[in-house]
Length: 428
Image (cartoon, rainbow, N blue to C red; front, side, top):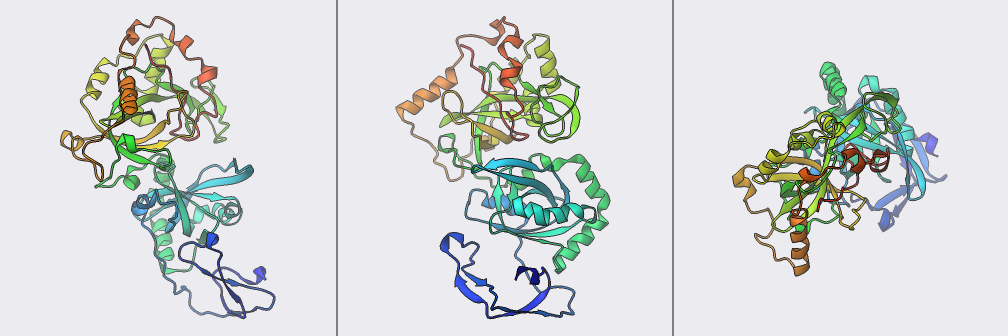
């Protein structure tokens, strides 16, 4: 019966079975379903109206982060597709799946990535790829959230994608895109959509969590914390693909085809290092990458590499002293790989220095003081004082002996532009 039904055409359907949807498959308030069988009568109805008289309740891109930690929540969005990333094949639940990210744009020139999986990619995804030049508009229904670049969307088993639907809002968005083709081309060239966008993640009244209450089950968390890495002996950079930031064993400047994004480009050093995030309640380890890392370090990845190759330590004493006086608003996400001591580690998605009056303000929905157990106090004291018995300036071993490239950097070590490498031992 399915070949008889085509999207956006009108039909008169009778004698369909009405059944209750099993509870485990119910979503978005849908509890009843039609079951069309060979006894069902389907008649196409000629319609003179060019625009379908339907109304959808779309979620604004700026409001998506409100639902990040609600696993049962799904949203409907409207956007124009302007670009796509490379398709990837991954293994989920012991079976291979294909996924490809598409870039959605709204009239506020905000972008969000939408991942299409398997059948969605084979059907609607191919239609989008074939018509990318004409700015296809899509309605995504019952889409799920994930934390790639702070906020992104993904298809789910009960999602639906409508490509260039004949509704007023879609027509208006397509016309807007065609009028702004030059600006859209600039967005595509800048590729800002592969970077974290605080405009979609950060709220004016952003709620924060005490470090002792951060758990790995949270997709992301916001904390107010001090950053410290004075006692962590590390390299401060890794060699990466200039396109997708994945780690590579290629030498600096070498042209190579990336195993991840499949694009050809030069290998470039990228800034990356580990820090401890500290507040009055505890300490957690985290890694920081790219522009954020360079801003904190005050050195670029290239400068860090040059110091390393010359067996010179970065002059960071002033940086360490300044960090002791600053507090940051930090957005973090957990990573799957734990440290050798079984501590959960995190990736810093975003951080911004707070004004002094804000850094001392009481946290939203958090107690003003926290009572820690003896074990927690001992652990925090050990983390905060580790390494005070020695100074990194006393280390005389050649740096390259401490950081064996083949062991600490692999092409699988970085699952995203913000992924992590192994934590280095602290100086004692």
